[in-house]
Picture 1 (cartoon, rainbow, N blue to C red):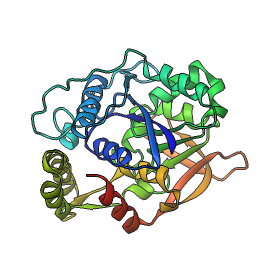
Picture 2: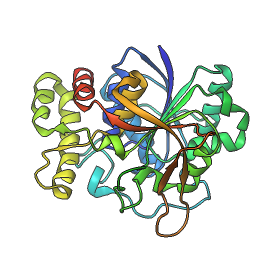
Picture 3: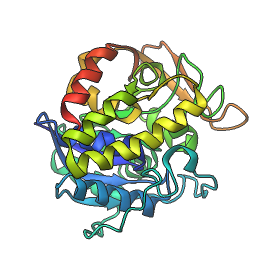
Length: 304
């Protein structure tokens, strides 16, 4: 089993990614760390604990950054994408379980030092927690086995504007800090995630087979698909951004990659843009192609 620290800003596709990871015997999720992004960090923590209760799993959750690496507050939250609280538009009561007291970046540092060259970090939100961990303890850079990031748009347009993908734009300084650190990193960006499509027709089976858990995931995913249908009329489904990062952790052959040096624009109208160049010192594996049908089949076999 591959030990995983899963860094989330839990909205709808994060929740799907969590379920996928927790139902995959190849992965051992040793802890979830939360960060602002889709929702404020307190809501990301609440949502993460809620998902864990829905899937009957007890795994520690560590709350992390509430602001960007440079200390800026996020003002606008994508409620039209993930709903008022982040898990669609249905009322969800507060979880019974609580987060741990340790700060998320400190948990990352502690675990990487405890298990050198073993830990894979899957990061599906802004990279603030990882940036804070590296800034505090740069000695962990060679000790992390791999970082798998859902973020960026190297050869395709962004999803916030023509340049930028949401996770990278949310804290572009943190993204640049991590990507320029030399850490071993795979970038699972819009180049491949937008080629995945979960058809709306699959949700009925979740409701039939998954009982309460199935309804929970189907209802929130239907809300998420509603956003896609408004943005891309006729699409009848949604992209599986965060789940694909989990898929790559399970089976890297789902994608093909090119090794690049990726720089992040941090200022101006192109802030958040990820620019890939081919250089000798490149350390970032950028996903460029995907076997989308095989990935979707694998995801559907495991998620509920």
